[in-house]
Image (cartoon, rainbow, N blue to C red; front, side, top):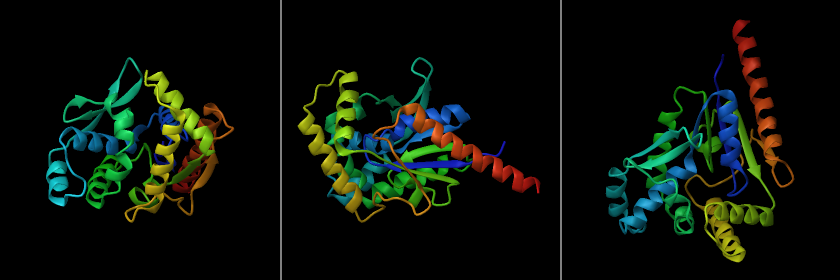
Length: 233
């Protein structure tokens, strides 16, 4: 069967990662959470006191960072490994959330991660979510999705996610964090968050996870069938 690249972009807490994981599982595709990659870099910077405003320090740190994803049979999900250590739990905390947009806005960090992401997608059969997948990483992706949701709903979802991880964070702090990340993500000079011209918009405010997944699967299968038909012709 013909394999394609599915690029899913959008704001924080819109359900990108959860949706992308399920789409990948249904199609038997690889799934790459690029947000986790930037979180892993941020976590490394915090652990090693790397100053983002020091170009030489950033460059030296990036040479020491290795990021991989390994499948966890118990959870049924890929988990993030930083230099051989599982950091999936650590990178999801508020300490990393507070700094990840700042770190991911650095041109050298983005160049390094985009290069790695493109290597991961060479064989296609891939679902990748992030902020600039359809615009920068895979501008030729066969299917591009841009996800959005009401701001208050996003904040409530993020609070529930943190509670599921036994992290109690005030809703106002989460709102402030999301607003800050939105501002940085959409205004940074390097690969800002924006909808690709040929991306389909999915507003997840009032849709269920199953509805989101099914919408993308329907579009993906239509593209796959069309390309297979054209190849036969």
